Image (cartoon, rainbow, N blue to C red; front, side, top):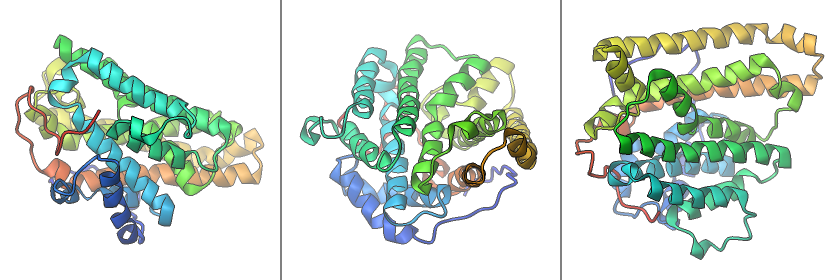
Length: 334
C-alpha cells in the first residue's frame, strides 16, 4: 500500500460478486491473447477485478465481467505504448486507426481471426458494451472511444519531439487519454440505464461529469508518478508541474490534492443543487431517478480509482527501465 492519500468525501464500496467474475476475466484475457498464462501471476498482483468491483459496486454476473474486461484491456494495452512504440507516432497512428475501425464497424463485419490481440479484445468489449443500448448512446460512446484512442497518437508526438506539454495542454489531452469518459459510459451500460438528452444537457451534470474525469485522472497520476518517471515519460501531472512550475515533488503532490479538493467540493455543491435544478427544468421522475443513479456512479468511480491505485501492485511496485525499454508484462500483437 502506498502512503499517499487523497481525502475523497465518498463512501468505499465493492461488489460482493467479484470473486465469481474473476475466473471469467482471467480466461478472457488469455482467450484474446492479451496475456499468457505465464503472465497471469504478476497480473494477478494488480488485482484488476477489484477495481471493476469498486467502479461498479452494484454489478454482478455478465455486467461485472464486462467491467473487469474493459479495465484489464485498458491496463494491458496501455502498457504496450511504453518504451519504443510510444515514440513512433506513425506506427501508433496505424495501430490506433485499426482500433477505431473496430468501434465504428458492425460486430459481424470483422472476422475475429483477422484482428490483432488488442483489436480482438476491443471487438469483444464493444459488442457487449452496445448490447441493449440505443443508437444515440452507442454513437456518443463511440466518439468517446475515438477521442481516447487518438490521444495515444498525440502523446507519442510529444514524446517523439521531446516536448513536455504545458499544464493546460496536458490537462486537455489527459481528459481524453485516461479512458474515464468511456468508463463513465460504462456506468450506464453496466447499470442498465440511459441518461436522457434533457439530463445530459444540464450544465450541472456536465460539470459533475467533468469533475469526475479530472479527479480520476489526477489521482491516478499521483499514484503512478514513479512508474512514469522510471521510464522517462513526461505524461503525468506531477511531472508536468515539476517541470513548468519548478515545484518539488512534495509541492506538486500538494497541488494535485488541491486540484482534487476543488473538484470534489464543486461536485458536492452541484449535487446539493440538483433537486432545485430538476424542478426548474421540469424533469419527469424517470429522468430524475436515472440522474441520481448516475451521480452515485460518478462518486463510486472517483473513490474506486483512489482505493484501487493505493493498493494495487501496478503502482506500488516501481518499474525501473530506460525510456527505450518496454515495461509491459508481455508483448501483445498490435
